[in-house]
Amino acid sequence: MDEKQQRERLGSSDFDIEDELLQEAATTVIEGSERLNRTWTELIVTGLFGGIDVGLGILAMILVKQATDSDILAGMAFGVGLLALKLAHSELFTEEFLLPINAVIAGQGTWLQILRLWSVSLVTNLLGGLVFVWIMVLGLPDYHRTIIESAASYLDHSSIIVMIALAMLAGATITLSTRMQQGTQNDVVAALTCMISGLLVIGLGMLHGALNAMVIFAAMLAGADISVLDFLGWFALVIPFNMLGGLCIITLPRVIRTHRVLKAVRTGELSLEKLEHQAMG
Image (cartoon, rainbow, N blue to C red; front, top):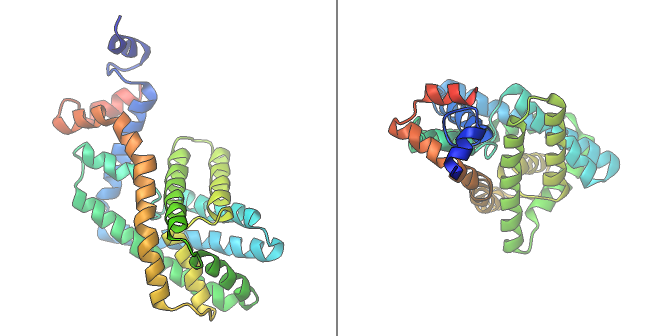
């Protein structure tokens, strides 16, 4: 018995691939197609709420940071924002690169739709976050010093190499965190994943364009000596490497391992309905 026959014998479908990978291919293509085909209204509102939901995590992070002066505890508190994203079905930039890319590779969407999804998500995340932190700054004057110090820690890096590495790690961490959450139906496990992801991203001072931008916006509104050009220069460096980290470290290997299934759907050898049926066992 060769390897292909062995895989077919071990699996519950007639496709020679592990059941878990077949399930991943089916769910990512279907969910990715749904995201790519959202109306403009749905896409804009989802992105706005993504910024607002993460703002909840920023609020928790600032509260714990000022009370404990611990980046680790503040990071775990920030995980509330990531959990809010999951429970509210919002969209965060770099949150899930795999879904739309798998959908396009499987012929269920276009690269232009991906560009629309990512660009609108990023802009609306920033707008939603800006509104939230503006209200936060108005309502919490006693926390301005902590907000300004947190923003300064993101902007004040003497080494470009360090910034690039931290940006790539942030993109990879957020993308993997979302992928892990989608791999479980257990809400407790999902919550723990969010807490751990927040601990890593905030506790280690990783640079994530959409997340850190909200803290920087809040600091600017609180009177920090940060110019728009300072922010734009930082943002222009961080965002591309967030994408590189999420795409190359996390997404690309997963695309490679299910590529032949995606190709079969694109060429018509396997219909999307049959793929979904086989993935269900």
